[in-house]
Length: 389
Image (tube, rainbow, N blue to C red; front, top):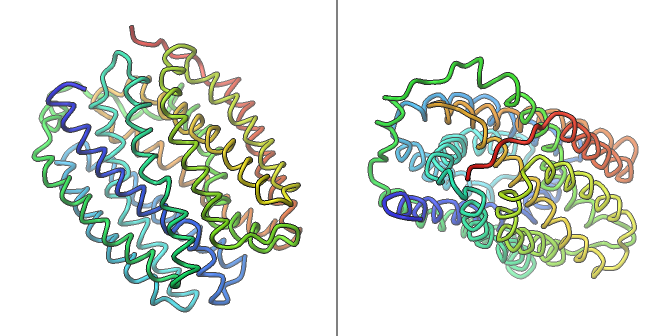
């Protein structure tokens, strides 16, 4: 990473590292905290929908705005306002409180999610992009490795509030890095380029990766909202908060380690094959959770899932970055995020209903089936993009 792009990449990396830590430290306890206030599984699904609606409404707008304004201002706004939301979570006691917080957190976070992806896609070099992206994401993912364990341990030791306060405090690191970014030079460059038409960003190969991402994203609300409860309430496992936090830490750790070689692998074999393979294998690991009656077995599955999830996330975003956007990177990343949002909006009530009406077994089988369908569509629709020399 050479100057000046290298400096900007490093500062953007710090922003994302702090953001990953914030999300990671509350990940193993958020659903359990909500559950302990008497919120039902169906209501937790509704909370997931509320969160996804915030992304759904505001991420496309964020993408459009980020192609026209200095993205540093958007990042700063998101960091400050989401810190306030983290501080409010420990004081929520009712379903309505969590509903408002879930919608507010995702809505405000949309001001940073799309601009960060768009900025990253513009700063990465065309040659050896997978190599650079892999190293970059290995460091970002590594920042969240211990966060779930810390969150789970602290919730066991001193209560649920402390991890949320820490999440808010870490925002100061992000804010400092954003200030050091300065005015981002790509704003002027985007204004001078001949832009791709909106039609080019929603059809053909772009549309295919949006469909694949939307289906794959069923996995995300399941992991964040339902899986901790499944593991905690399992008659055979009955995992504690610390054990769930350890499981999530292992997932984060192996994902971070995998990023080191995944980018190079994509540079050699292409992203489409990787996406197809890891989605199919990830489906198998979820079925394995049904037979995990021993904590070390849970941790082993978590280690495998970390590698596979990193492969899916890296393969999909690298495939998208390989497609031409011509001055529309914000729009393209906004549409990619919108595909995630649609998947999440559909997934939350679907999984919540399946879990409540038919039990956790059916919800796991449902997720596995969708991942297998994602693998099949990837094989049929994701055409190998030419890799830059």
